[in-house]
Image (cartoon, rainbow, N blue to C red; front, side, top):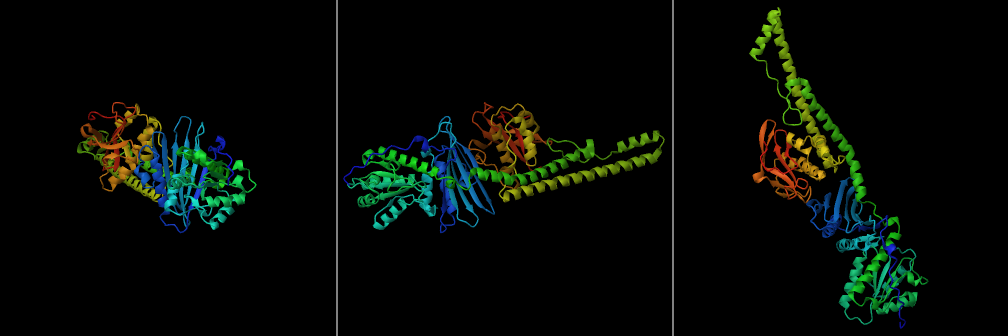
Length: 573
């Protein structure tokens, strides 16, 4: 043991430690004997990890393990969840842009196929122009946190997230057998214990930090002094590790290996905490390099993009069916004005409404009889004319009743089908993207939300010259009114949630109008509008401030948008 280990503490070439286009992937499985709530616990730990890395709180949908999208200062976090007869699948992405021309995506997926144990997949992708450092993006602490609470398996063995102390001949024999196994794919980070320990607590903390940092990528072994002698006898001193040094044994190691390929870090290079941290970082870089070299079997079987595509594909057929029913409804409603021509009037609503034609007055009948008498046809013509008018009047009433019944039945079919699609885990609006320009807004609203939301005539005029820049955000607000808000109204509840509407965005608030209440003339009646959705504090800047004034119309069971997108300072005329 008197021979001094050679210095070989240079890290791997920098380009080998970068995340290439294929990405870094680690997949672990929950042990069969784990608690049934293991998948839920894994999702909860992942969400906590994502929350720690965002500069703003995640929405309540995230904490409920539902699909969401949330943007921060330099990061975007999104998640998607699908549940069907095949199982329960959840995936989240954290996309960070810390510097110009740099973008990294860390993804975690928790899949629980029906009848099988859950598994957790972690991926890291570099989408940067200037390559990013992968060491800071790999969520080792999240995976270690899962292993603290849930028995996890990696490659058929228990996932190692704590250092393994080789404290017996049997353990030493097992360690050596695995070290020289030609089929080994997991790197070994081997730490030797110095013979003169000054602070054993500090040493143990260093080993534990290293093991958690390398969770899923490498196994940390600790060799006491007497075990370093055994290792030197088995692999030679030049390939051993002792006197407090650390060594990184790559897969494929044997007693004839090139020692420079299995780097050694001497104790005198780690005299202070900074040296230990730098060595641990280099170990992590080498472990990432080895994992990426392992090949495609390290990649997850399901990810965020897979679930997004599957959800979109599953939602297209129901969405198309809902759209066809909506088209049928609009066609039915559109036929009503043609049935009675001028006797069918238009209200303030965008949909045609049916009105009974006014019955013939005595003055009208007398005038017609007088004209018939002057024509020489006498009372017979007058009687026939009255009979024809009465027949036409009754026919118009029958058409009006039939049109209204068909309209109501179509609405009920759309509502039932929409609820069915949601109950099956689909989204009836999944195939319809939000508009990105104001000229698309009113047609989009009529096409997709026409049975739930109505735009007042003043709104349609104001949209032509709208200045608010985020059209998609305004569409998400209308979508919330058409679904969450309207459904609460239909249930008879009080949907006026005062404060942030997390389902839309952290910047959107539902607030009472107070002194800024507006009046809206709708379907021949004047309505007082007392609530509005608001985004942006500067009401005098129409480009960045959005205000949507709305009220609930119980007669049509729709939300009526009275004014948008600008702030209203005075009552509408």
